[in-house]
Image (cartoon, rainbow, N blue to C red; front, top):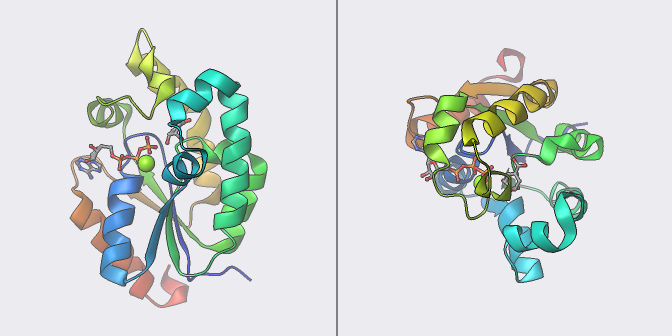
Length: 177
Ligand SMILES: Nc1ncnc2c1ncn2[C@@H]1O[C@H](COP(=O)(O)OP(=O)(O)OP(=O)(O)O)[C@@H](O)[C@H]1O
Ligand SMILES: O=C(O)C1=C[C@@H](O)[C@@H](O)[C@H](O)C1
Ligand SMILES: [Mg+2]
């Protein structure tokens, strides 16, 4: 049976997974974990460096290990990386072990919120960031939807309101979710 004591946030870069996740964990008194930050803390280097040394494949392997471990915990709010849903193994673990919230954002909004590219090597050297975000989104949106228990549009909505929306959904009787 799904462990609904965990809340897993998925969605593209700039959807607000880290920002909303922290806020939600604070208000619910839950532990907040971010898979990107966890990978950096454990390796002692940043994501861009891992991409540079090991390629995207190396990063995905580390991400898979972290997601397998973190989804085994209880009572956490987990903000995942934008590409976590690419791996079938991650999708399976996320959907089986928690309540999955897809934070949706239009490419326009993603673009505005990802001006800082340090932790986003896929955007760092892009000639056309919009085109990259467009392509990633076209491929990944169905994967996010596949495992989402709840989809929230984030365009023009602030993190406080979004965290409260998630809270409201969780307070509803299971049959209404
Ligand atoms: N709902 C929101 N409204 C306005 N700004 C936001 C909102 N959510 C996040 N932001 C801002 O957008 C930027 C990206 O947010 P955040 O890092 O939380 O995204 P993310 O989904 O975790 O991205 P990534 O997949 O790259 O980790 C931050 O500067 C954050 O302050
Ligand atoms: O969308 C992606 O593939 C990524 C998003 C970030 O959260 C990081 O996990 C990394 O930059 C890759
Ligand atoms: Mg994040």
